[in-house]
Amino acid sequence: MKVAIVEDEQKLASLLTDYLLEEGYETTHYTDGTAALEALQQDPPDLILLDLMLPGTDGMTICREIRKTSAVPIIMMTARVEEIDRLLGLEIGADDYICKPYSPRELVARTKAVLRRTQPSQSPSTIGFELVEHEAMVKLNTRSCELTQVELGLLKTMMAHPGRIYNRQQLIDRIYSDNRVVSDRTVDSHVKKLRQKLKQLDNDAEYIHSVYGIGYKFEENT
Ligand code: CA
Image (cartoon, rainbow, N blue to C red; front, top):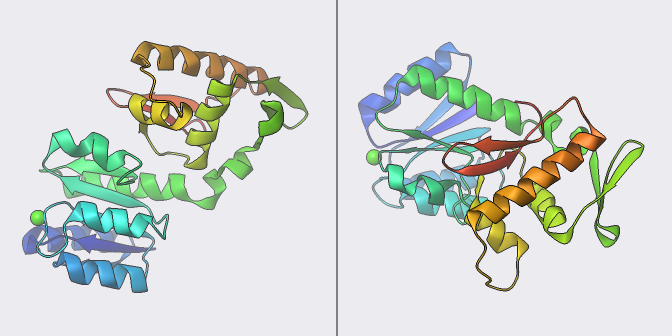
């Protein structure tokens, strides 16, 4: 597995490199944002560790640009807690984040976790749900369940990117085309009902997970 580190702090980057090499990853390192973006597009790694503040092109722009053409897992490294919602959102599209200062050990653990959940075995097709949109139904093996349009929208949105965290506003934006005002509690109650329905199809697994302080994600049991 090849991990690209985009980080302009030389010391931090070489520390990370050491830890990743020790875990058996191959690494590449870039200090300049513009050079990084070009190289990452030409020769995509298996995962990108991306600093937010960089000389040249900044981390957000890099992430947004890469997302236009690639689903490569991206972990953002940031000291700005208030940006996290946006980073993980649809606009920027990072898979995870870690707040600076962090321990390299923790970042390696996060890298492993993100790689694990973004491997093909975690894709929705192997989870096995089938959405029949014109009938507003979800099927799993021989069982099926009717959904409301809102539940269908929620499931479709989250299933498209297993493991990606959506905040409530992002879900609202995706589900309702009119700009209606919908409370967080309304979203929570739709999610709750959707969960109950998925339970009818598979009582042994949990597919929709709450992420404390942020929102929800679709993922099998992890
Ligand atoms: Ca930096």
